[in-house]
Length: 265
Image (cartoon, rainbow, N blue to C red; front, side, top):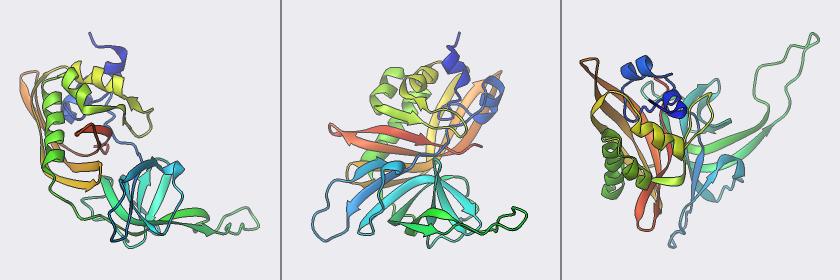
């Protein structure tokens, strides 16, 4: 018997969508979480990056930030939707079709633009346009990816723990404050995530990744790519591919996952 938490939680990291939609209330693990990775841009040795929530960020044109979120298209251009805080990408006018709606990381300097209130017509109609404060990231384009073997090893360890329903190994790979955020749903905390990972039905044959790309800023690392899960259920083998982006931090000499993002399929 599954616990109520496990039954209501859809773990895309280990189970293909075809099985999820038959066995669980499909919800995926998207949702938006804005993480800012700030670093000094001088020739001197850079200080360790700082990761903060969007609501606590004061725009500073002298600092370079990385924003992790979901690629969305607005009327005025490309944005990264991070929680309830949309960030306009100054030089990214349109997202490529293959990235739209998927988790991305973009870099630049963050500024706040204030727009006056739009006029209201005699019958209460409002003019189209932007008003209020707007966060703008310049240039707002992806940072150069790397090939960090340690980060890739940490991600593959997560794949392996999910494939074997190894709660102990997965606990060691996730930070105490780990969150999984799903659009329109409350955050899934670490305890619920771990309980669901070991309570899944069906025979998990494998969990692996493809097109993995890493980004690293000091003790913060990001892995983005496609997860491939194979499960045998009702005598059939189902393979599903889903995009994901995981944020890791380095603690006590090893990488642990702090945030997991994935779009609704």
